[in-house]
Structures are given as structure tokens and as C-alpha cells.
Image 1 (tube, rainbow, N blue to C red):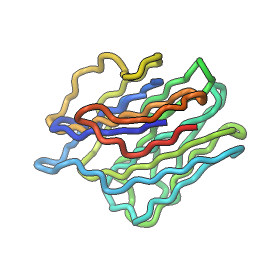
Image 2: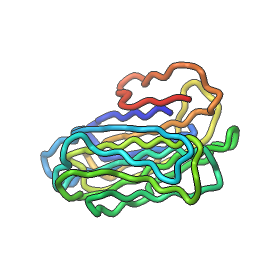
Image 3: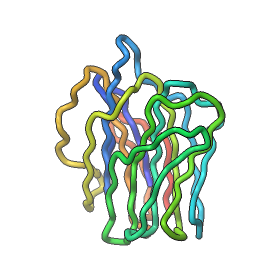
Amino acid sequence: MMIKHVMRRKALMITLLLAVFLCAANAFAGASISLVQSASTKGSGLASISRSFVNNNQAGNFIIAFVRMSTSSQTVSVSDSAGNIYRHAVGQAQTSDGHQTHIFYAANVKGGANTVTAAFSSTNKYPFLAVYEYSGISTLDKTAQAQGNSSTPNTGNAAATTSANELVFAGVGVPSSFSGTMASGSGYNLRQAQTG
């Protein structure tokens, strides 16, 4: 699993190679988009997986949750201990080994301590959850997703963004047989990576 994001002067987009791609808009005049904090966890044989943020969330910020599931037949929902509402942005099933990846988001979050939980419709063999808090984002703009077989995954063409300030956020899932290393492309930053 590789998750990467890039900040550009535009809106917020998400990618799944499975690749999912999210573009979220910044409606705050003159404000820049910044990663505040991120954290991740993986498990085995769980009906849900949780990860706390190390520091308190700041009121009004934007949370992105990336979930990897080791099955293509289950469903997943995301919630948190602060009572924020998570919306499903995009997801993609991986047919070669039967896993799926999803990106959820919560806008205008409540401030304070917070633990994010991904709950599965049944026990999940190898779940992964990564959570990100950003400032300067107000809403989701565009998404895209694709499945492929390439050393340089992409989601294909995404629709034009509607904002002058944007965050591009990409999440990539790889088959369980993957034994290589992950690296971000030029202009991107690798924030969390979990393989195996």
C-alpha cells in the first residue's frame, strides 16, 4: 500500500492502482493547504481497525481516511470518536488478488482528541488504515480511480478542477505478492507506505 500526496496551487483530488484520486477545493481566500498530521496502522483478523491522531484535531480542518481491505466482497464505513461525518469519496476493487481500497473524508471537523475507525461488514484478514488531517481545505472537488498493472500507476484522465488552490491525494493498493519498494513520482511526497 502506498499513499502519496502533492500540494499544488489548485483544489483536492484523490488517486487509487488500483488507484483512487481525490481533489479537494480550498474555499478559504488566501489560505494555503497544509498537512497537519498523519498516522497509520495495520492489523490481522479484525472486524474494525482504529487509529488515533497523535495531536488534537483543529476545528474546521479536513480529514482524509485511506482504507485497504483484503477482500472485494465486504463493505466498509468510517467514523470517529469526535462525531464527524465521513463521506465515501472513491473506491476501487483489485481483481488480481481480491482486495479493495477506499478514500473517505470529513470536512469542517470538530477540534479535540480523535480516533478514526474503519468498520468492516465481517472480519477482515489484513486491513490497513491511514488518516490525514489537512488545514486549508473546505470540500471535495474531483475523484478518479482505476485498476491496472504498471510500475507507474495512474487513474487516467481526471476532470478539470474548479478551484485555484488544490491538493492532489493519491492512494495505491498493490497485490499481496508485491515484494518491491515504493517511491513517489517527481513532485509528489510519500506520506505513508505499508506493503505485505
